[in-house]
Length: 137
Image (cartoon, rainbow, N blue to C red; front, side, top):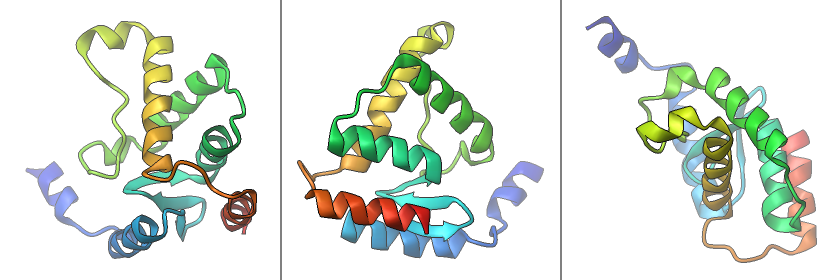
């Protein structure tokens, strides 16, 4: 019951997430919420992860398994309070996946990349540059 009440209580930026999410879905770009948190195509993502995914998706920068593993661990730690919300990208696929964190991290990273990419096949380099500037401002 206490968890239900906690989930019903608005966080300081709950309404801002909805607005930011709508703007992000319309523009296909990240929208700043607060600190280093952004809404991007329906998910909550931090600045560092957004930069890594952006570079992977649009510039085809190779990402090693070590980066993917660190990313999923950081995401799990940072966003564990959001597990029940639709903005959270659940890394767990099935029970067997819990045992193989490397495979889990590769699948999860691919899932994040597909969400960020959305329906856009390719962005002009200038647009990617502008998104990077937005993420760092």
